[in-house]
Image 1 (cartoon, rainbow, N blue to C red):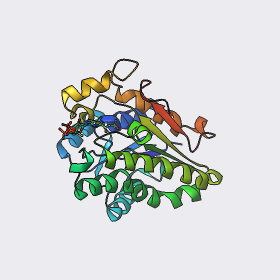
Image 2: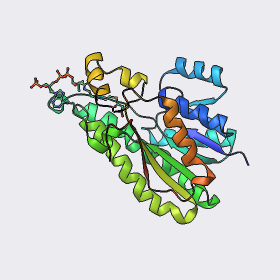
Image 3: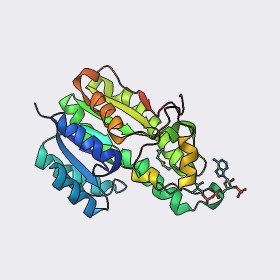
Image 4: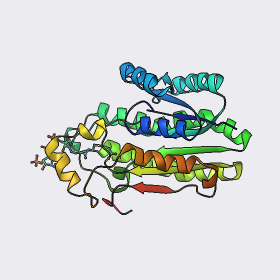
Length: 240
Ligand code: CAA
């Protein structure tokens, strides 16, 4: 049976690599995105993956978007909560807006996306939820009180939901990528980034495909005994 996978933030960065890896593993894939139409259309043309636009920060938009994906591609068996944003600032300069935007997308986005698919997964007795957290949800990062709080919250969400889903055949796991060579990391000032790379024992940034391979594994039937776990992929930078 061909399963349907929905990847939020699935047209760029780590999400794009996840969408492609799941497509290559035989899933019907829907890649959600929030804003960058040009990148999404380019991604669709290059990969053939269907793209859908809505913001994961908007619950009603998630319900509507998921309804459309399911009408087009069938019930969602795999949900990858990957969409995330940064609004980095030292805390004494952080605005309420910077706090709110990051919490709404990176933490509430998981509620908004998972809640509408949960009942269907319970009814079908199968589901795979993979939440993309971050090394900075594990260790904290100066300049990211908002992001670190949201990403740590994602881990609590994962562990609670894993317990609820287990009897219904739903696994819920998190991946904590370290610093991966994406636009988000490249947006960090070059001198700051050089200092970060110096802290990574393998001596380089990670590749998006290295995170995508973790997702494909956690989504597979063979990973059915793994739930509530946090898979760390950070080049040895932080050993949680
Ligand atoms: N620890 C403690 N203090 C620090 C610090 C640190 N790591 N870094 C900077 N500071 C201090 C500075 O010493 C300075 O103090 P004084 O004012 O007393 O001199 C103060 O904070 C301001 O520092 P900056 O001049 O650097 O401030 P800025 O406003 O120019 O930049 C920043 C702030 C944008 C947060 C910048 O420091 C930055 O980009 N830091 C990196 C944050 C980061 O790692 N983001 C990850 C993005 S990628 C991602 O999030 C993906 C993922 O999951 C890994």
